[in-house]
Length: 191
Ligand SMILES: [Zn+2]
Image (cartoon, rainbow, N blue to C red):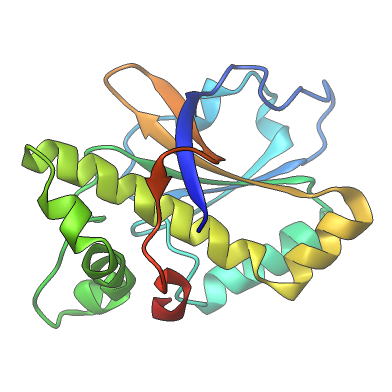
């Protein structure tokens, strides 16, 4: 099974082109109150930003699909970053049937798929941080399974990254494949 660990993102993780050309599609969370894109030392024009509640791509909504089409087909970006953040009040379990909770239903699916691990953590803070990481990782896996992403990887070396922003440290961590944190079998079938 795939697994991941976290590594702090250096400001030069993606080298700047030093010219106003979009090279990154950054998919972030609507309620992120920080300019987390600035953790990379890039010109503003090098990043196109798309935000949704809970940095979700698995809902296949028209806004996200249109942004992906634009970034991949017209801008020809070479990186996609999905960036969640710790202390996210959206990436959490939701129990009612409001539109927001319906939108975030995949978060519940991820929680349920990892319930034994998450419930065994020593505090709600630790549980919430872990859920954010699992959520971002799952969203990257959804992207990596898309035919247009696979095609762009083969044609121009497109890379997909899963980041989590830590506001307490003003830094991002990268979710890197490999490590001791195993994903629960069947996660992809839930998304
Ligand atoms: Zn958020």
